[in-house]
Image (cartoon, rainbow, N blue to C red):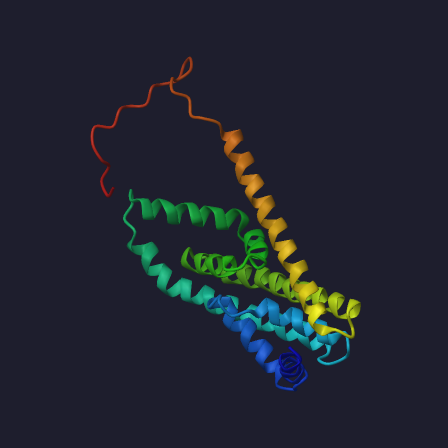
Length: 226
């Protein structure tokens, strides 16, 4: 363990760490298996002792996340755009893209900011926003808000752990990661509760039309494209 912490100390306090942090945050935007959040938290822990410095950690992590989100958006714009244009009206895929386009138009900015805190969710959202043609100017604005808030969140979580366990960085990293997992779990719990409540509020569909309502015509066969 002492040998491992020595390697981590050497890596995090190296001047090259800033460049690596930027690259990892960028790659994580379109290849979500890179542990960018863990790296930001670790950097925050060590920033409590002065090296690396907290401000560059936040700036470079945010810049990398902003760049990575735009790479994912452009991939979605190019590849997904062809899928959208190729979806025939009346098919399930066409309906799904229509729903995604309406949802992004109504709440796309909020979804993008929240998804930045959901592992894997950020890439799915940025790809979808590109595929449905979400306006680039609005995307860039909300991507900046998401990236800066995410970088501050991760770095400050680590910084809190570093201050609490200044003589034991490993415990500081554990505290920072634990807090991050706790926040992520709380977000997921809220999302799950809202989905459950929405399903309950919607209620079962009525089997019989009410007074003055027309009974829907029975379908004889499958619709074209199904």
